[in-house]
Amino acid sequence: MTLSPSTVADYQHHGAVVLRNVLTASEVALLSEGITYNLAHLSPLAQVASEADDPGRFIEDFCTWQNNPAYAHILRASALPGVAKQLMQSTTARIYHDHLLVKEPGTRQPTPWHQDQPYYNVSGRQNVSFWIPVDPVPLESSLRFVANSHTGTWYMPRTFRDQQAKWFPEGALAELPPIDAEAAQYPQLAWALQPGDAVAFHMLTLHASAGVGPTQTRRVFSARYLGDDARHAARPWKTSPPFEGLDARLADGAVMDDFLFPLVNEVCRS
Image 1 (cartoon, rainbow, N blue to C red):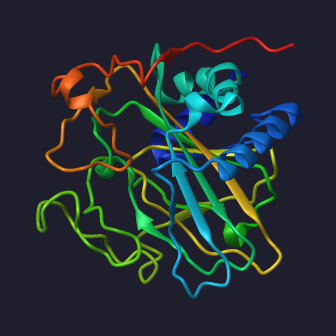
Image 2 (cartoon, helix red, strand yellow):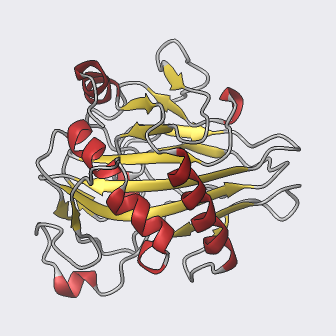
């Protein structure tokens, strides 16, 4: 899948871009099977990210691709690695991790504004996350982005439900600006999506989403890749997701060369 120069430029400039039909129909079906398997075999990292009184549930899980053949195929043998290299302008693409996000019908719980990279254990600018639904996603339930918010400022990562600073110490990073209250100053990007579509975004791009309607299920698989300049950023706290034992294998500042993060190449599809 060769991207147009304008698509790559939009990603580099805005920090987010929509990709239509990045997965084939058979890959969407395979990914749906992988999500079904994941939900039936949740890992120890799985969590319910919605309140107990929420009519639906927001279920998340992380880092299961090595035990899920469907996920492994999508991460390794779909168009994603080649697309990732183009967007990152990198000669390599390295799997970072997978992330399952399922909002059951009627889930009110929003995903608040945040960046991803401050929760992680990586530094560097060459990275990309793909947010890939296997269900149709109307505009009002889709992921929203603050355009151009990936250019350098790191905002304080907090827990989604009670806003605790469990990562960087209080005052170490900037606090989130009033994004929704000052929409003109913080222009947003969002797209309605069909199965096979994806949005690609930088790990520093501010993003958020709403809940879902009473009859809507929103099953999303997120695939995250690292590029040439990614380096291990050892943290004195538990990152999200955590990678147990990694600090003993990789020095701070080292290339992310570990069995957890293999290099992948795009595979030609007939």
